[in-house]
Amino acid sequence: MNKLIATLVAGAFALGSVAAMAQVPQGEKTPPQPVDQAKLKAERDAAKAEKAKQTPEEKAAAKKAKRAERSKELTTTEKGQQEGGATAQAKAQDAAKDTAAAKGQPKALPDKKSRQEALKEQEKKAGQ
Image (cartoon, rainbow, N blue to C red):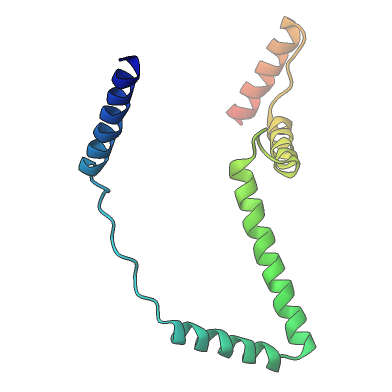
């Protein structure tokens, strides 16, 4: 009797899950765009032919330009995605800006008398 009940429960579960899966919509899937394989192959062959015609100097220049472009792209993404914050170079630039700004600020004066004298000098300069 127990085997019969277990079999019926398992069967009901299997049929219920199949019915539930059949009712779930698969979403709005757009068909893939048709790709013209012949056109892609022709473009690839033309690019290979152009590369074969290049002189060694042109190849080196193209390689150098591509390397510089990738390096620039990498540094811009590194700045935005660095886990610990900015890179060491960016930190150094920020520190240099902070020091330049701090040099323009007046120094803190140690006692009240020197503060008064500095204030009088500023008033004299402003009055002239």
